[in-house]
Amino acid sequence: MERVEKRKAFLTGLKYSSYCVGCCWSLMALLFIAGVMNLLWVAAIAGFVLLEKVAPAGHRVGRVAGVLLIVGGGWMISGVL
Image 1 (cartoon, rainbow, N blue to C red):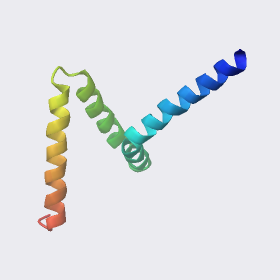
Image 2 (cartoon, rainbow, N blue to C red):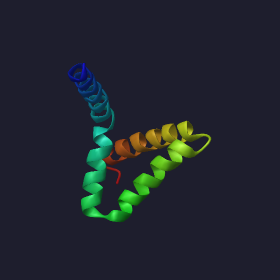
Image 3 (cartoon, helix red, strand yellow):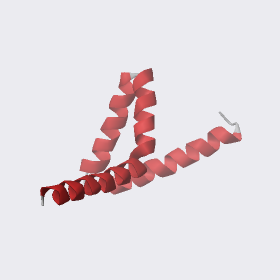
């Protein structure tokens, strides 16, 4: 019985870890790159994520930030900056 429980626990952990990696790989890569470059950027990203998760209108903060990042990326691609 113990072997079956260990197998189920392992498969559950594998399922949730693959979801986490699939969901947050870009954030992890960004934190790694920013962490190598500058600890203040890591603190800024962590503060933003905290604001997004804790603020009463956090879902709006995330959407506004997403739109601003898309606009900023388009602006940079267009060569204006």
